[in-house]
Length: 180
Image 1: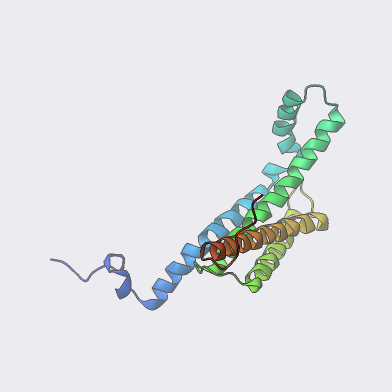
Image 2: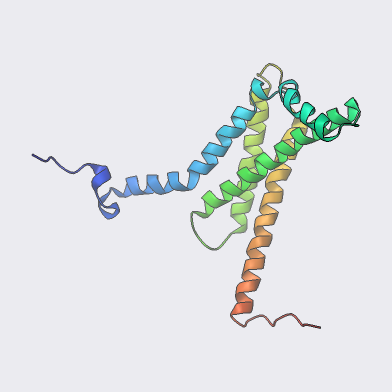
């Protein structure tokens, strides 16, 4: 005795349109949500400067055995701040991917929206850190995070532009570069 088909057994065209739209949305946005969750986890007390220093500074001491303690602390600081930049660089690219939703063309508005979302999330993350023991909120970190998001959008624009130039070149619309 078989009952009515389960929704997950139905072909995509028979699913309710709203369910298909939700699945598309999730497909585009789950990487953003996962990465934002990772950023939030990295903002917990587990990743205070003191705790990361217990791992990073011994590695730095092994690599730079003649470095002074001040130099090692400076390198640790630089690594932590680079982490901010890279985390939000990646977040910005993932947001752009989600906003594009599989479309080939890019729009400037998507880049600005990605930057705005990155800046907003960075501010929210720093606000969260103000409540975490061993962490502090920093406007400078919000600016650094946002700079990472801006850099990602600039890189995405350059990659898109380069791809457009190459495509036009293959189509014969752009004269090839002169060879000497």
